[in-house]
Image (cartoon, rainbow, N blue to C red; front, side, top):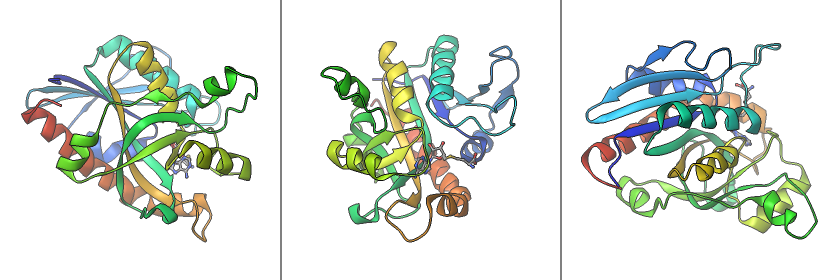
Length: 240
Ligand code: SAH
C-alpha cells in the first residue's frame, strides 16, 4: 500500500506538540466548527499529513481523554481528510513483567480491545471486548526496531482488579484510553489503522500510575515523536 495521506490521531496536546513542531504543521482553527477536536496540517516529502487532537472540555478546560472524544475526533478526521492510513499515536501503560520499560515504543498487534465493557450476555460479551483490527505491523516493527503488543482501552487511568483480570484474559499488553474507540471508527470506514504507543508508566511498579504518567509524559512524547518520524520517513520511501 502506498500512503500519500496520513492522519495521526493524538489524544492530548502534550503528546502531539513535539510531532507538530517537528513537521512544522499548521493549526487550522474552526475546521470542525464549534466541536472540540483540533486539526493541524502539513506536508512531508510526498506525504500529506494531518494531526487531530481530541481538544478540551468546554466546562472544565481539561484535555478530553477517553473513548467518546476519541470517537468524535476519528470520525471528523476521516470525514474531512479521507486518509489512506490512520495512526493513533499516544502514551500508554504497560507491564514490567512483560519486559516493558518506560520510553519503549510499541506498535499495535493482532487486534485492539476494550477491557472495561463488561456485558455477560452471549454475543454482547464479545461486543464488549471488541477485537477491532489493526494493520499488520510485523514488517514495520522488525524493520524499524519497535516492539509489538495487544493494545487495550478503557475509560480509567487506574486499573482495578476486575480490569486487570480482563486484561490478562484477553492478553492485553498496552493500556490506554482511546485506541479501541478509534479502531472501531476506522473499521467502519474500512481504513487501515494501527497504534504507535510510547510507555509512560508500568502498571506493576511501586509508584501510582498518575505519578509515573506525569513524571514521564514529556520524555515519552519525545520518543513518540521520534518513532512517528521514523514511520513517516519509511512511508515516504516504501509501500507498507
Ligand atoms: N492529567 C492528564 C490525564 C491524562 S489521562 C492530562 O490531561 O494531562 C492518560 C492519557 O494517557 C490518556 O490519553 C491515555 O490514553 C494515556 N495513558 C497513559 N498511561 C495510561 C495507563 N496506564 N492507562 C490508561 N491510559 C494511559
